[in-house]
Length: 108
Image 1: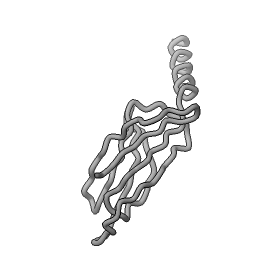
Image 2: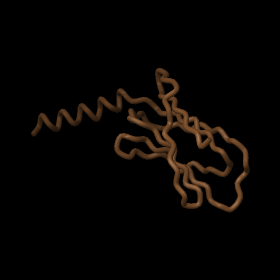
Image 3: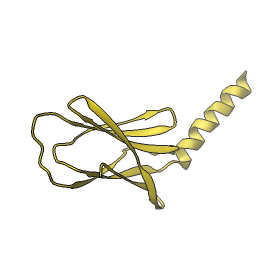
Image 4: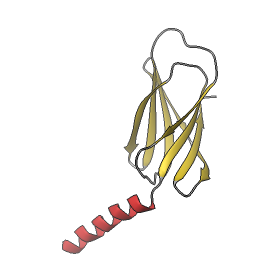
């Protein structure tokens, strides 16, 4: 039982040490998306955005968001909730730097 606890402890510490901050370069097809934070859902890191209202600017917006903790997600998702209609977009890893993973996701 003690060995199991040690193994779990080493795994948790190891994944934090192996992890990096995650940057999401998000492209939106219309304005008004408000960043609501990120959360882990299993092995996926989900960046959450919300739009509310009746009218949105029809301009492409590109924004960057960075986690404040080191993570090693299997996949990264951009979730956009527009007036209750939720859409998810899988982000692609485009670059790995010494201190962070850089992903891109787009509504286009």
